[in-house]
Image (cartoon, rainbow over all chains, first blue to last red; front, side, top):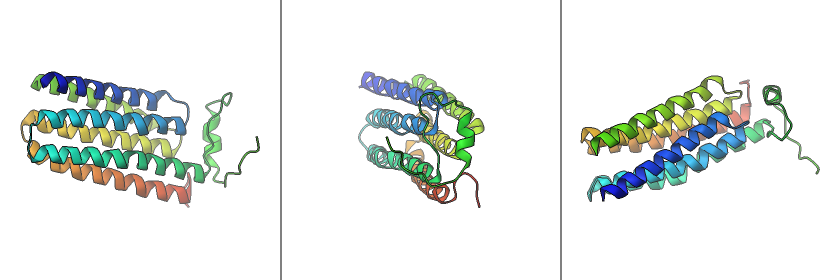
Amino acid sequence: MTALVIILVVSGVFFLAVSSIGIIRFPDFYSRAHAAGKTETLGMILILVGLAIYSGWSLNTLKLLFIVLFVMLANPSATHAFSRGALRAGLEPWTRGTPIKKQKETSEKTSVIEPEES
Amino acid sequence: MNSFLVGAGVFIAVLAAVCLYRVAVGPTVFDRMIAAGLVGSNGLILMVVIGFIYGRIEMFVDIAITYALLNFIVAIVLGKYFERTGEKPR
């Protein structure tokens, strides 16, 4: 039982580390939201399920599993709200070849995004 | 097992501190918000781990539930607000 808990917690901490590295290293907001939305949720689920197994069977297990269920619904929803707000506020996605310094200039204009014709 | 939890907690705290770099230098306000949300999530996990270390999980798990609810509500409200006003508040 303890080995299972250790495996779950270590893999969860690994996913949290991937999420933090992603939010430091990625070039623009939308890819950072990609790193923060999914990887963080999976890391939290793994760690909290591991700790719920470690706590034995009691009311605390039920509360921890409630936190897992709520985080599984709420964390991607919050990331989606941020991304939709950024897109409607006029933040343009980074494409290949755009210098990263230009992000600051394009993000400051608050205009309605027009759909590109490809 | 206790020392393992202490090590995991210290590592999670270091990851939360690394996310504070993006809060400080992030180019847009959305970067700062999403990094602050990540710090909040790491703090939630850290709170549960501290509850197991101290052996008082029945108190810390309630605080963790409240923290998860507040984190979600702050994210939704800030997303709606900056969706309307954009980068600069009017």
